[in-house]
Structure formats: structure tokens, C-alpha cells
Amino acid sequence: MSAFITRRRLITTGLAVTGAASLTVASRLADKYGLVPPDHDGIYGVGERLTYAAHRLLMAGRSYAREFDRADISKVARVNGAPPENETYQRLLAGGFAEWRLTVDGLVAHPSSFSMAELKQCPSRSQITHQACEEGWSFIAEWTGVPLSHVLNLVGVHPRAKYVIFFPIDTVFGIADQPKDKIRWDSLDMAEAWHPQTLLAYRMNGRELPTGNGAPLRLRVPRQLGYKSVKYLSRITVSDTVKNIGKGYGASGPEFGYSWYAGI
Ligand SMILES: Nc1nc2c(c(=O)[nH]1)N[C@H]1C(S)=C(S)[C@@H](COP(=O)(O)O)O[C@H]1N2
Ligand SMILES: [Mo]
Image 1 (cartoon, helix red, strand yellow):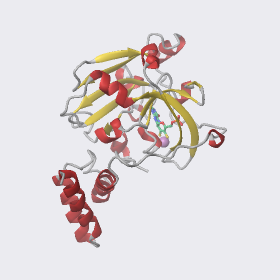
Image 2 (cartoon, helix red, strand yellow):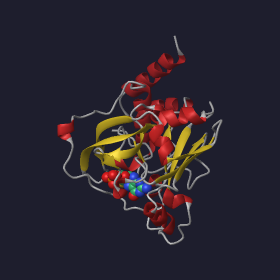
Image 3 (cartoon, helix red, strand yellow):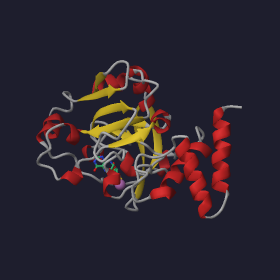
């Protein structure tokens, strides 16, 4: 049978054994098959890498975040993370984002940049999902956008690719005036990046994406905690490594205590 079944059986065996020994066994298996999150040497240690390996192997391809009805949409959509205060963002906002472009580069056949109008011409998907912040609040909203997979297909992803990395407007342009902990970037593995519910969203609850919720374009990853859904997008890079960015943990979050993998 396929290598996948074998791998799955191995990991299941590893996870089924109880006690500390199982953690060692399963973690060694996760290591062997490359299912180690980039922040594995961070504070979450072995438990964190097991969550990731277990999700990826035991639920491969089958898990969808729940989608709700219109009647479930929350009255208030909270904002966490104000729009960039830098001059570039303010200028783009004032111009209705006509000058804004999304750059897509890295391990792709056709490095490209897309205007908002171009992205809006792509096939769109709308989904009513729950956004859960790690701080303990959440809301349900409808998001509309281009599936990330569509854009990845347009640029042609190299088979060596392992991560898709997301940079908001504030990391790409001069930000000397911002405190370092405000600089946010994040990444997804290819399973999450190709998932049909992973969207580049430009509408919320039937209207243009409000400024505070990430205009002009944000990532929506409904299978993971809110902080993975990077707002105010500017650049997407496809890579086989995240070691060369920041501390090499795959996101800014793990540098101050959040886990890279935030599956729910
Ligand atoms: N660029 C950027 N993206 C971001 C944030 C941010 O501060 N800046 N906050 C994150 C967090 S912690 C959460 S919970 C969600 C909040 O999205 P919302 O403001 O639409 O509720 O966006 C995430 N994406
Ligand atoms: Mo959050």
C-alpha cells in the first residue's frame, strides 16, 4: 500500500502507546517523516510537535472547519491588531487600494503581482466560519475571497516547496517607527495552503473588508486560531525553508510564546 498508510500506521502506533515512552517514540517518528513544526525547539517541545504530526497524519485531507448559516453571523466582529500606522498603508488606504498589489514570489514558476481588480476576477468562495482568537473571544462571519490554492496554481508552485509565507504591508515597507513586536509574519505548510477553506479574503459579511479587519486583503485560515489569519497582506513567498526569516520558527508568534501550528 501507499507510503502514507504505512506512515499513518506507524504514527498511530506511536501515539497509542501510553506514558512518556510513547512521546519519545512518536516524536522520533514525526521527525523521521518530516512532520516537525518549525518552532519545535520552542517552549512547547514534544507535545506541540505531536499535535501537528497527529493532525496531519490522522486527519489528512479530511478535516474541514465547520461552516455556519447566515443566521449565525455575529452582530459584532471584533478587531485585534489595528491597521499599520505607517505612511505607505495610509497612502494606499487613501487611494482606495488602487495602487496596492499582492506580490507572489519564491519557489514558483511565474513570480507575479496581482492588483485587487485582478484578484476579484478570480473564482471566489464565500464561507461562514468561526474566528477564534487565542485571547479567548471569537465571532462568526462570512468571508469571501480567492482560494489561496487558485493563486498558487496561477504562479505554479515548485515541488520542493514546504511553506507559504505571508507578510503584511507593515513588514515589507519601512517600519523603523514601529515597535518590533508589531512586526508580524506567518507561514502555513502546504496541506493548509492547498486546503479549499484557506482564503485570500477581500469581503466580510457581504461588504468590502473593513479596514480594521485587514483591508484590502487578508488570509483566512478557519482551521487554525485567529492569529494565523494575517491581515493587510502585501507579499506571499513560497519556500522550502523558514530558517532564514527571523528566528527561524516559521512565524513571528513563536518568538514571543505562540505556537506556529494553531490547529483547532
Ligand atoms: N497584520 C496583522 N494580522 C493579524 C493581526 C495583526 O495584529 N496584524 N492580528 C491577528 C490576530 S491575533 C487575530 S485574532 C486576527 C483578528 O482578526 P480580526 O481583527 O478580523 O478580528 O487577526 C490576526 N491577523
Ligand atoms: Mo488573536
